[in-house]
Structures are given as C-alpha cells and as structure tokens.
Length: 209
Ligand code: 3PG
Picture 1 (cartoon, protein in one colour):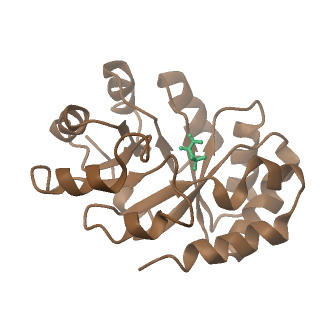
Picture 2 (cartoon, protein in one colour):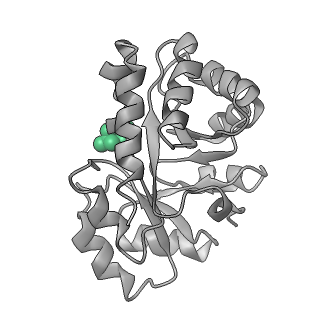
C-alpha cells in the first residue's frame, strides 16, 4: 500500500532528478534549486556521494523534501530512510521491492511503463506512479490513451522530459508532476554553475499550467 506521497509531490510541478558526484556540491546545488522555486528533489543512488548528499540536505535545508531515486531493492530503501529521505523512487517495480516497501514508512513512487505494470501497481494500492522512461515508453499519447481505462492513476512522467515538452505533460489530467535532469545536469553541477541552475529552475517553475 502506498503511503501519503500525494502530500509531497508538487502539483503540476517539476522534480529535478539529480546525480551528485561530490558531497560538497549537495548544499549549494539544493540551495540553487530552492532559490529557483524547486523544493522537492530526487537524488539518484547512482554515485558514492548520493547518501552523504541526502544527509547534508536533510540536516541543513529542512524546507527541502528529498527523495532518493534509482531504488532497486530493500537495501536501497533502508539506506535512504537512514539518510533522511522523505520519499523513494524506483525506475520499475519487482515483487521483492514492493514487499520491502511495505516494511518502511517512507512512501514509494514506483515506476511503470506499460498498462499491465500500471494495473499491477494499482492493485497493490499505488495510485501515484512514475511513468518511466516517459518519452521512450509512449510519451503524452500513451498517457492520454490510458487515462480512460485507468482513470484513477496519477503519474509523474520522467525520462526524456525537457522544457520543450514538459508543459504538454503537465496539462494532462492524469499527470501530477514531471521529473527531469535538465535544470541541474551533471555538466552544470560539475561546473558549479549555480546561477544557471537557479535560472533554469525558475523557468521550470514557470512551466506550471
Ligand atoms: C534519469 O533516468 O536520470 C531520469 O529519469 C531523468 O531522465 P532525463 O535525464 O531524461 O531527464
């Protein structure tokens, strides 16, 4: 059963998906996103620095809601909750992952890319799902097509979202928010270009219909 993730996800907003290589980048990066108006972040567990980054932001920027992404198993869930994550995001869903999620209070946003995957998650009580990889899995035409038969499910499409197509997702009735890396790409973080990240974040906030 899904815990209360609807209270965390920004309605018709954008969730930056982050890859943090160096823990010392965590606070200036989160501060730059926050200044641009983005206060719900997803830090992917794809780097050694990820959990350290989560801990730093949770401790010093309590107004930020941090999720961890790329959750693949129960161990990732445990490490995320210990670091202070408010929610966790998985690219897909397996039986073992869903069983592990039942043991934790932290809400899971599980990934789905097909009608049957969406149905299976909904059967287990997951009304909010990550639609991943959004563009490759059918984009807005897919989401429009399943809005009728799967009317109660709400999605956070992620994967291939950009400033050019984000608004077309955000106007759909079954989309609660979108995720994307464009406003804080690895290149911008590597350059420590916080000003540009704030500018792109403001632009992302303005996409809200
Ligand atoms: C990812 O897998 O890193 C996220 O889904 C973000 O995808 P994007 O880089 O296409 O926005």
